[in-house]
Length: 187
View 1 (cartoon, rainbow, N blue to C red):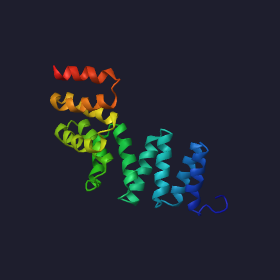
View 2: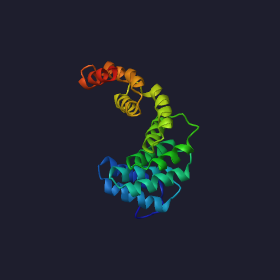
View 3: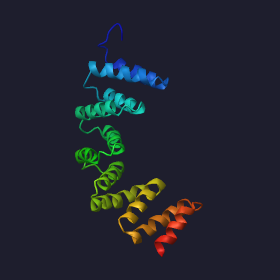
View 4: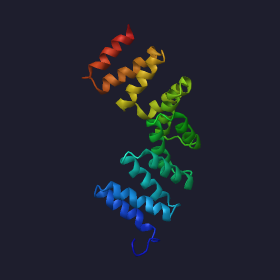
């Protein structure tokens, strides 16, 4: 690179080598330099955004993930990672904007993100619809089921929460929380 900084493909490879060696600061620096040389390399932009995320540099993470999406508007993985960042920042409207770009794609991760974002902006009917659609894909995922059950309970849909809590109890019979919750819901 010091001999030929315009040898673009080396930036991603060198950044990945730094990442493997757990030298994340150098990986990020390399990614940023590479992006300045080749601002249309979606893989390098995505890599740089993910490294920034690992370093908790949300500003650079968002910047490079958005740039990767600008280069390839159908880059699903970049959209998903960006959405996770936006949801963690409670930027629910921002997450919904990204989801709108991918509304024709039935990716379970996007459906779950839609539920979370709509819940975050208090669009409970839209959130409920998305949770129902996500259940098909995540009915074995305890974290999802717990989130879904609590959403239903908070939304006053206690009867609908019962089968979800029963499923949680089936998946984790030693967890007393599910048994207690079930007793409470059936009262």
